[in-house]
Image 1 (tube, rainbow, N blue to C red):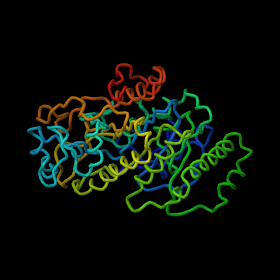
Image 2 (cartoon, helix red, strand yellow):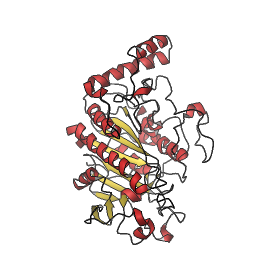
Image 3 (cartoon, rainbow, N blue to C red):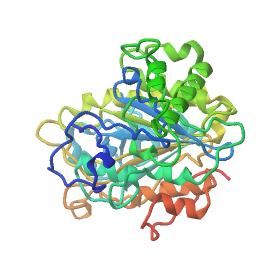
Image 4 (cartoon, helix red, strand yellow):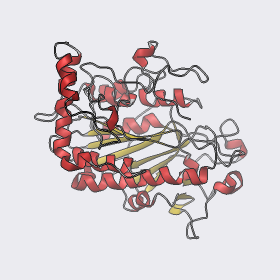
Length: 424
């Protein structure tokens, strides 16, 4: 099970907890109630299961979306290296038929094949709008969900109280006439988006609706407070912007399993507004597959694929200015365990999609799956650093200056931004 996210400021130390340590005392962590977070987290009843989204501002017309796949997606299942001589023997029942066979993989130009549940992503790959980076990992070598997710979002060697994406944008002034705050679904704001840049909340209607005057009453009670008063007022203003932009769609209850697609459709519409946000961060859980993986991964793979297609649809012409980075905290073991699943591993896969992406290729250096090539004798060996991908998008897509990129990933001077990820 993936544990609820922790609040670093409540914990105090700001350090990543070691594996096996005590869990959080309560439920999911809450965003700090201050000038840095517009308080739409009050709408806990609007949170959707397994999917969240947050927005923020950036200069220019480029759109950047980061998708966090919580639970450790098995990159060897999503993108199978059928051309590696050792693959079929190691994966057994998890190895799908090769491209061209019934129920087979979707070909990626030889050697690699995409899971058939990722048909929309495959179409983007064929259109030159998707790059797949295999054998990629963060800068940590932990198999703890707790620590790996913290480090993925903080972008540092320890858990900080702010995320790398928020820090990268913190020094960028809001665009003239644009909405100064972002939006976030539910009360559990991703660490990735926490920090100095204002972030608020939005979600399509969930299983319950707060009383109509609840927000007004909370705002009135906090109006005199110099910290929470302005935050709540700003949050309500941004909430009104979101519902005004989406109209009746803001109240639609998504179908079972369709939360991610519903959020992607809404996010695309908000990102496409002239005065709307330019940066979004999604969460999609359900990737921790220790047992019966072949069946259990079908649903989240389909949800991811449908969500990416919905985002492209709702962005319309703005898709050509969009880059989407899809990442997970770690890969999974190469060998199948005794319950037809996989355990926590190291190297995995990342997806870059969007009209701005220089796609149509499988990037990265493939390390091979022979026994001597495995990391610690059990995992896909990582050959690419997630930070280089993120840095490359911040520098070349959002056009952020060097100091802003460096601030996002402290202590990573040796990791250069990867070039060639987006179209010139």
